Image 1 (tube, rainbow, N blue to C red):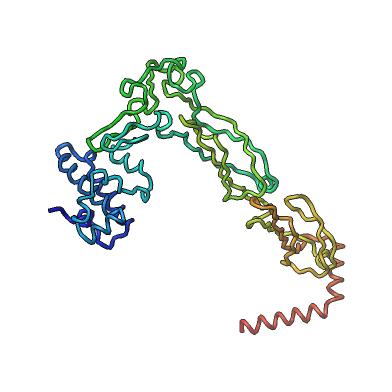
Image 2: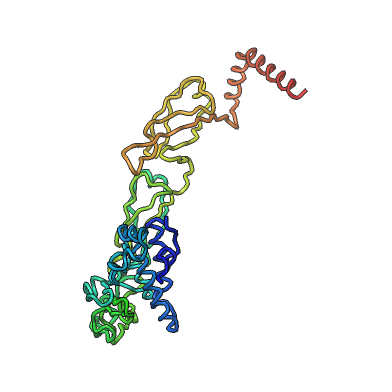
Length: 385
């Protein structure tokens, strides 16, 4: 008597299709004959047939409905071995190649033939797993002025490059190659276990179809050498510490193309300016006389000196806004603002004439200052009484 299909997959009768797929995948990986010791292959083959048959029915809505209504009797007369895979919908899995590669211990690439029903598909070159070069990461320091205006920088990047003597083949003079004996120059070998026939990347030549008979003396057969390359990098205006720039194909070399170079920006601190997003902040020292009488002063910005009016009676700590004098936005055409906080400077040393003038000023305003001063003293006494 056949076991219940739901029991075989370890799911409930209300299980969703996704749950059924997940259960099947887990069991298929566990019991595939190529993933068990030789002594357990026979038992694994029977178990694999069993779970594949269950999945072939429960993954098909029509078959599942018939099975739920009539049990095995509802589907046995129409069920064939081909249904194991014809009914198995792998669209819900992340990558069919990933599943198959796990069945065969990794390295799977190319077409497959179920139960010997077909041949290998595709050429060894087109079906092999791509081997693109490794990406390189590089941290680049720029000043705030460079981040403001944008700049072109040369960076020195150590990376692997193809050996010029062997043109990246690893063979002496680039010609000392012969067909791989294991795959006959095809780059693939066919694996079979009675259930599958699969074209897998040849482990001997890694899909190249050729092996080296005499190594290149310059690179020792690796096909590449470590070199330092000067690369021009355009830094756009407005970059910040969160900016990452991609320079295509300037990473490590690979059999199927170069990797990319990723530039991570670090903007150095500035002596005068502080940045917050696209806005710039600064403290602007002004004299007592300018603060009292008002006037026009020159203010430094990242784009150069600009004029700013100081109204009479300006108090220390007041913040002035300079519109559009901040950082350009790296993602748009907008520009931030600059904020200048005025700080009134008190002279540390006075000449005799300056001291006399200030004393005269104090006398002229004395009653008012004295009253205010007394008022402050009274308040202090009350607080600390």
